[in-house]
Amino acid sequence: QLQLQESGPGLVKPSETLSLTCSVSGGSMRSSIYYWGWIRQPPGKGLEWIGNIYYSGSTYYNPSLNSRLTLSVDTSKSHFSLRLSSVTAADTAVYYCARLSVGSTGGDAFDVWGQGTVVTVSS
Amino acid sequence: QSVLTQPPSVSAAPGQKVTISCSGSNSNIRDNYVSWYQQLPGTAPKLLIYGTDKRPSGIPDRFSGSKSGTSATLAITGLQTGDEADYYCGTWDNSLHTGLFGGGTKLTVL
Image (tube, rainbow over all chains, first blue to last red; front, side, top):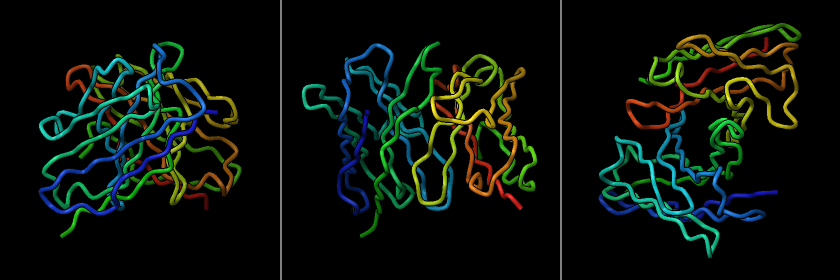
């Protein structure tokens, strides 16, 4: 059974870079029908799509974050990562990693989620 | 304000049926698959519906999804107190080139 686990600092200072890693276990990242994604949820608010990455490294980013966002993948280590630069208090949120199943089989849905990790931006 | 519009809250009695709407546009809902997620308090979202109207293994048939034009609907029948949660719709937008979630709907089972 596929499992995802986020890891990274829970506290980041304003203007610095937020870095998170999602470790994938119980399955392979190298499949043509999956992307690997990040979603965040500010306190008391709804879900926001951050971006997706394919095992080959191709990416889709939320345009509102594009200038600050970098996603990367390392299939040999079964993990993918997020870097968000120049963070502010508005980036405080629970950050989730998830598997996106695409096409007619997967229906373009996030079908496996990590438990989430809280990131607070504060000095 | 979300590109996909959901009612902030809905409520119904145990055993009844409730529907949650998700309104979008041609570039998102009409032309793409819709998914629905259930988020219980303090937990990660859980996939309820994928491919607009399909249920993952383990999701009871009390939950169903549909779409007409630029709007999608999640229906829940035989409401149970355990269904109290936040529900989100999701899809892709071909014009914005981004994934989208609705603002979420809080379901209360009275």
